[in-house]
Image (cartoon, rainbow, N blue to C red; front, side):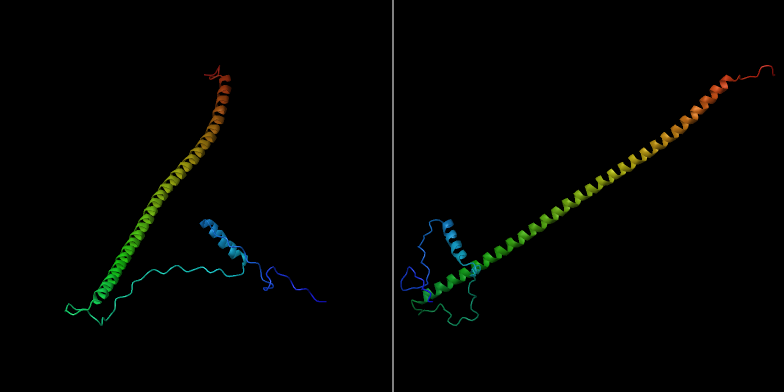
Length: 188
């Protein structure tokens, strides 16, 4: 049995997908949305991420200059333009070198500032650590003192309870002694 061929809307291009209508983005957000939609239509396709643009570098000055312009008469009218171009290029190179040195100086200053901030933070931390240690020691000493006073008071309570028992016994003896006469009658 023969399978009928698929019919497409575009005659002459069998099996092709319909072309999507052209959508023009009116805002940057819409443009970004359209780009994401296009990427997500085929998730297996690798998305190319462009590299960062390389920093502009001036062309290095030539090591050997063959056509040196002198101050002699007879230079053609085109020589001025060549001279002007060389001068402009040299000024660009010098500006670039100045900017690079400023950037390096700024980086060095930044790193120095970061180091100073780290040192200051470390100093503050050390100072606070020392303060915490002192406070910890004071608390420990106070706790030991409190424990010792509690122990001493317990000892005193024990002693006072022992003393109070002894006092009670002595008082009882005195009471007993009070019942007996302090002198014996009839004896001399």
